[in-house]
Image 1 (cartoon, rainbow, N blue to C red):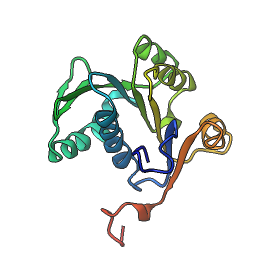
Image 2 (spheres, helix red, strand yellow):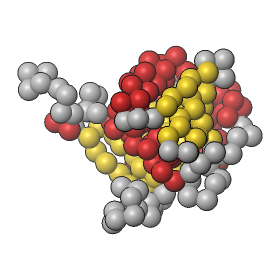
Image 3 (cartoon, rainbow, N blue to C red):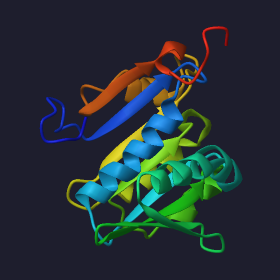
Length: 186
């Protein structure tokens, strides 16, 4: 969606919601890093999940495997929760953050980001999400959201999904049929 030939390239971000096992996390995490590497060099990004442990398990492990297969060099520093990605003279850092509770917003304060991916955003407190978005102050920074459907009164549903067009954010609804790795029986 962010490529120069896309009719929606001017969007400020992307929301993907829908069925579990529909491929949202895999699609968004790989696309987020590819976008960051194509648009920036020497910048910081945030990969956010409910916890850093779940983010490493659900996002980082498959993501680094995919990036390595595509010719990227990935180095993860566990003590800093920092993934450095390099290719063709470009290098960017992707920091992992957990948005478990209201106090988590303090963890991301002070950073300047080129973009943020919020995996399972509906499970995070609004204060953390808003602080992460406020850190995206580089020219061309975008927001990437991934979530499973919550009730129609959830703050993210009301403020982002229902207002996607107003906020100039592309909204994609995933279904299980969007995941080609699942067999018909599954």
